[in-house]
Length: 420
Image 1: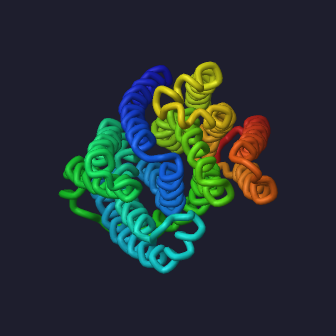
Image 2 (image 1 turned 120 degrees about the vertical axis):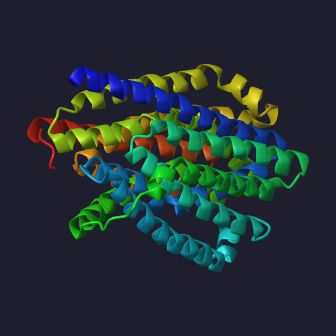
């Protein structure tokens, strides 16, 4: 039985890995198109806005953890319960999206000064894209929870393809610059939403049933550590671009953005594995089955993928930067080597985060929180150059990694049974 489950786990990993990383490849082509079309200062501005939008919508991404855990525990009337969950979530996200837009609009003059943009129009377009992205997260979360990994990959891949096509239209052909790139994000996300509705027709057609108050309370309790985990991981992935834009000259911020966009491949390439790891471990936890083989397979694959990315950038970083961005971005190469190492360590840590979350073991939040505070504090004190910020990022992620490993070792030896 264990062998068949492991084979299914590996097969699902293969499906998600191919589809989501195909979407990731299209997203990187989108970045290359913008990087070659925009000068370094505008490219840095675009990615600082992109990172800000990602930070704003971070709380919404807890849905994929909460939904996966809840759906794994449903034993009967599955579609009916999921329909209820989907309906409640859409109404909730509508309120959240309106709040994001209105609050962001009121803070747009401050954001304009902090991110050094010329007008507030890019801020408004970023907020619009963030609102659409919030709704997209619901459909991705439902597909993950139902283990419809093919649909999940198609929603992500279709959105990435649409983003690239709209970027070619708005940025390359029409020459709308940063604003064109942000418009491309909004149009692409709206397209992915339409496709997600079509993919979940059976859920929308199901008859909703009332959710037990105990289930809602359990989801609420689980949402709290999920929120802290995802928020802090998002900060580690995005805040450095925003801080580089704020503290560094515009050209250095552009080089840093370039290095980070490429370096994050070491984090995002294996991250698709977590889409399979979390629901698999959550289901095993409910049934009382062994689940450590899921952790070791995911860690091993992540080490190979992230380590391979780092080696490629370490050996051929200059050639890769020249190929994708041109000679004007050569200054990004030393930063790229540091950032890719940091993202590799964060990817390894993220596997353990997801495994612990599925088992309701939350002690890893302490080293993660400590690493975030360390990053923010050190960048506040030491931000003389973009390379300095990159070294701070590496030191902070190394601290998180070693703290997380120690926590996992402690749990394995002294608390081997997950709390259900």
